[in-house]
Image 1 (tube, rainbow, N blue to C red):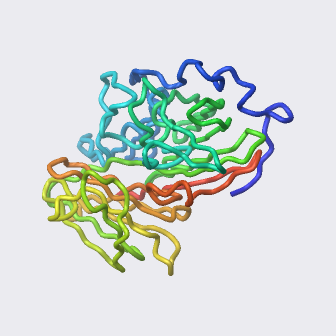
Image 2 (tube, helix red, strand yellow):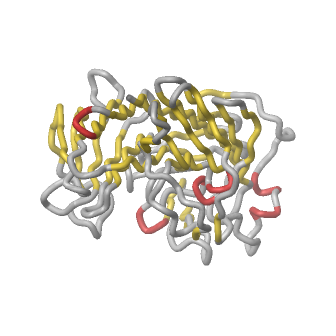
Image 3 (spheres, rainbow, N blue to C red):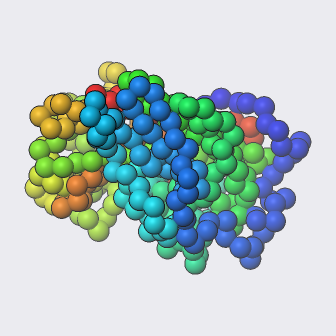
Length: 329
C-alpha cells in the first residue's frame, strides 16, 4: 500500500458527486457490448482488451508457424451481454473487493451498507470493475493502461479510482491493478483478478498452498472452517470440476515460505502451458464447475466472505496494488 498524489480538488469526497446521492441512477449499465478491442502483439503472442466491457482481457493466444491460434483463455465473443450475467471468458479485475460479501452487506464501523445496485445487479458478486466502462489513458503495440473513476454512491459511499495496466512481452503478460481512495474518509479495500483458462480434458494443474479450504457445499460459496495443510497439489481435468465431491471452488492460502503463488496449467501433453504468479495476493481462488471446460485461478488480497474483517484500510490518497504475471509456452 502506498500514498500517491491525486488530481482531485483538496478535500474531495464522494459525497459531493451527484451519483453518490440517494435515489440517483446506478452507475452500472444493464448491457455491455464488446467493441473494437485494444490489440496487443509481441512476437507470437496476441492479447485483446475490451475497455467498454469491464477492462476485460478478452483474448490471450499464441500464433504458430502455420498461422493457427492457440487460446490460453476462453475468448470473449462479440455478442452484447448483461452486466449481471457475464460470459465465462477472458480475465477481468475485481474491485473494490473480491468475489462476494456475506448477504451482500458490508459492516463498517457501526454502519451497515447494502452493496449492490438494485435493480441492475442481483448481487454484489466480484464488485463493480467488471461491470463498468473503463477509459483508455495510454496505449502502444504491446501495452495499454485503463482508468476507472467511481464516484460515491449508496452501494459504496466512497470515491475511488482504479488503474489496470496490461503489458505483453514475448514470454507472457503482466496485469497490474491499483485502487486509490479519493474520499476524505478511510475506505476498506480489496483487489482480485479473475481469468478463465481453458481446461479441456487431460489438462493438468499443479500448485502449492499453505492450506486449502473448501466450501461445505455448492450452496455456500465461501471457505468452511475446515482447513487442511496441503503443500504440492496436482489436479487433472476430466472436462471440468476440481474434486470428486462435486465442489467447484477451492480457496488456497499463499505458501508461507515463499510468500507468493505459482500455479501451472499444462495442455496437450505439456506442449503448451500457462504459469500464473502473484507476489501481492494472500489467497488464490480456484474455480471450475463440473462439466464446464474452464478453470479460474484468481489471486486475491482478502479471504472470500470475510471482507468485514480481512481487508486493507486506505486513507485519502492511499493506493492498494495487485499484480498477476502469466508466463506462456
